[in-house]
View: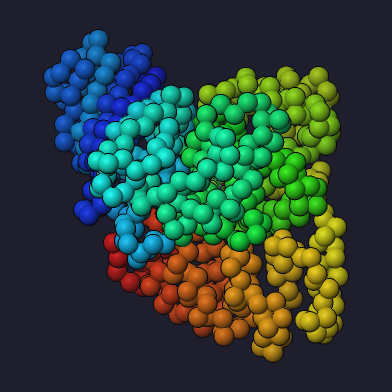
Length: 595
Ligand code: BES
Ligand code: ZN
């Protein structure tokens, strides 16, 4: 059923995990035991996913050692671990250790952290990486509860996607519990010299101790976001909602690990303007974590609904103009991604429902799931009106709570609950199963951006930078401005822009990244020092891809890209390394370094 897992839940499915591990920050290794409670249905074995793990032994519930085999390694799926189960046995304890280069793990040396004194470890499970640090049935269609005991060096603190400590323990031992059934990709761990600061009754922020105060200021609206989300789609079911701010090599903007979102420090802009990302990860507490895509082919069920929900939260807090701007930027991202996919090996990836069998699921995780998914939900909303659509969504989250569903299950449900009773004229089959963007898509517009576009016209006609009417512009207006600078800006005009608006010195990662992209496209090499600094510290894939891509498209850029990448690569997480190695054809140039 799930093309990306070896598990056979119809024979035996895990229902609960007790994880007992020791984290070796020096050897870069996790060692311990994963004990599973099983629900058996048929057959005489249970199958788990592993990737690069060494399995030391497997002990059955009755205390005897089990026979097990490891299948042929597959570069994407890893190896199946098949354990023989005598009749009546419903518990197995797997003792294992992680391998070098475990894809979920990033071990950071002190220099790669904010405080430069302590090492750091974080995990990234989505999509199919959890199997590289825990032997597990690694399919989003299988849900388990878990408890964990984690031993770390005494001067460090551990946190997970579970109940968390707010202070360091004296002995480096930490206990965790997640009592709601979750899919494997949401099991997560971070270890470092962490501090905690509360931002409200149910919310707070973890970060390296020197970063906690800045992070808590930036995310001051967390509690309000949580209340806005609940007012829309029902009670938050996970207890606390905290965020951990990770070091800058974190490959994503955010990851919705339950109870504890993992976030990039690049959303700390100093003006709270990028916290829509928190609204997004929080929204996943309903769309994704409560109702989960059963396979990665159904990824749009996670992300499309979350982008819709994110916009509703930010609209409630920051108003319609904010929302219009982020919708337009998202639509631009969608058109950009669709154009790239159309000319790729897999033009069918512009359909919402994917067919990723035999491929790395990561390859199909594009803005299509996010923004075409969002566009479909907005279209349906516009046809039935908000009150009905909100009631539908609330019912959907309740109906499928703590379950993993396929696109087909969703389709049956929405047809019966909404499309048929309300005679909604939207061709769901076309939107979901066919490539491309249907003609009835609602193209978002923004009045703030209309004003930006006027200034772009003036700039194009030669107006001096200082005379542009930019008063009151925030992050999104600047992004719109920078994204639409005409090709062929001269050196003098680029200098003029930077002198007037200080883009190169911007502490806002979105503005800086958009500016650097224009610097590359316009051959403004004065900014290449800044570019190198950015690319060697930040590992967020969303920024890396367009910057390296722009470099590769310039005549001299390929050499520059490879030079910077050679330096930066050891700082990147395996997820970003995989993408960039492919994009830059790295293996054809240099022997692969170990990460
Ligand atoms: N779940 C995703 C991150 C993800 C996607 C990890 C696919 C692995 C595979 C997360 O919720 C997300 O979408 N993050 C975005 C930010 C968001 C505001 C669009 C990101 O990381 O940029
Ligand atoms: Zn998301």
